[in-house]
Length: 214
Length: 53
Image (cartoon, rainbow over all chains, first blue to last red; front, side, top):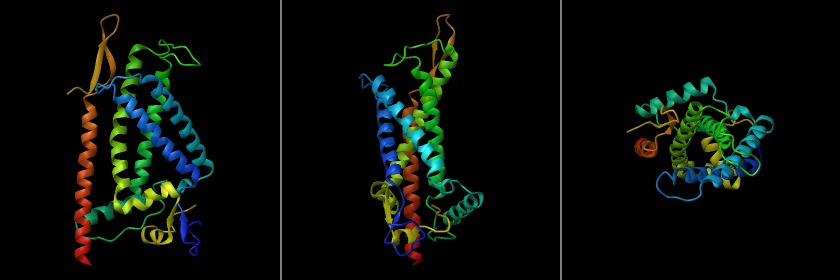
């Protein structure tokens, strides 16, 4: 296995083990959070508070781990949306929609859509984490006592609204993410989130080495 | 359909309680609409590409 510039290798490393573990542990946390957050609302009653905040704390640690990895060990340029890349993608999608072009567009490590999705998830998850940590102050935990007076009643309402909307948006995002992961043309990317690599052929068919920088 | 939930505080004032849970189905339906639209759009483009070849 090699980096993208070594054209002699049969496999191209796409996701290191740390990133794959982060992704799948985050997926488990998100599912636990959505199920414990929404099943009681839908009438499935169980003791949901403890698994909900525990999954939230684990998610917080995972996100901190990912932020450190992204800042110091990964190339941020792979996830940054450049203006030229954005306008190029918009015009290519427009041309495709109008039937003027049908060419398969080569992307960097991630497409503009994938980068945009990542940033949207980052915003929503950070919003859920910050509001969730504020909400945790209102319940008793193993290492702290509840303090419902740390924020006013009206501010607490706003925090609950923001946390609720972060959860609701997450429903849409998880469904759309799973859909794209299961699309036939994206399946090699999904597989790489398990095995770590894509084949040289998949790389050359879909990716531009100039745009994929490790 | 409500967007927000309200409750009364100890002084009887109406205060925010949270997002309305009626919206669960709206956000789930939004995902389904997007998925169906994208699947049809991609299928159409694939057919067109095959015809061009």
